[in-house]
Length: 171
Image 1 (tube, one colour):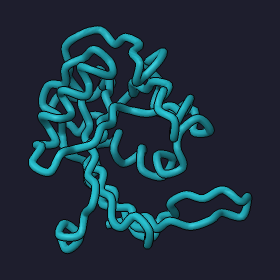
Image 2: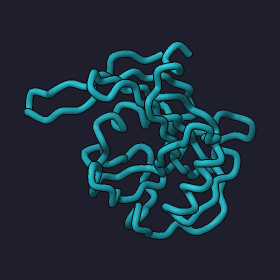
Image 3: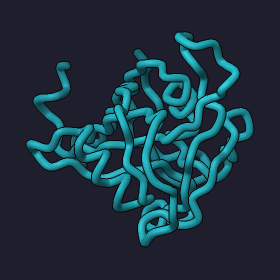
């Protein structure tokens, strides 16, 4: 991709899902619930998030997702599926990229940690969108459905005086 040369920071994001067991075998099963926890990180404190962590220059996103999932939730993803990228641009910070994965099989029992508190399963059709980050509200649906999407966000100030990343395009 064109932007890859200019990326300053890379992250991995994983949504751990339970599948609807009534879906026919071999079909593209939809997520029936997603595991989210309350972020304990300063910039997203209290928001519901999936597993997220920064990637080093040579890190493999799938392997990093396994490590972050074990550290943040106490579970080990099995066969994460790539569901796209989110690119964020601002004049001051440059380009940041989040590689996003959907996990439908894992080992272990979710537990609270210093990163994600009170993890819980949220039915896909009843997500508490008011407790999700702004960009997650726009991107989570395609990720849970396993649809490959590429998003581009640009930093801007909103009418309510807060700032964030506004969606510019989807591919």
